[in-house]
Image (cartoon, rainbow over all chains, first blue to last red):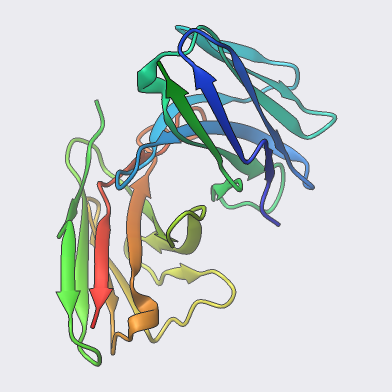
Length: 112
Length: 116
């Protein structure tokens, strides 16, 4: 099954913060986060490998709760360039064969 | 950084014809590549895993005879859409993982296929 993301869409004013959640029904080995602009390929943001791990990438960070099979992406002081569709990608703990399953996606629009 | 090159970026073909899409890893070797399909405003759905020197592994519901995958070298995988129909129109994207285990996936720029 595909990981479920929430919210489906969000509109922010520049400078505001947002949280995007990703929930899986399977035990996970890792969670990836990608951003895709319209008509382009997804771009890798970060990967989280360990339960409870939190990573940062400039003003974008993420956490991974291994027990709950959930991850959250935090966008702080949003910029216009943050607009796009965000996908989590998950690798299962067993039987995944190195395959990435993408979540349902969250459309983010940052306005002036 | 690791780059995956995908060609063509756009193709329009007539119904019933075949289309080949190429995916190359430019600065790393990829024993495994992945092919995804994305319909408008939807997520990326994995179609198949391309394995260098062996048969591809297809996801449930993907017709292996329709979507032919060849991974003849460590840097090249091809996807051929055979006997294309309008419902095959979609955005096809390949990906590879330059660093196994701990790194992210690098994606090609995608191919917009339109079947008329």
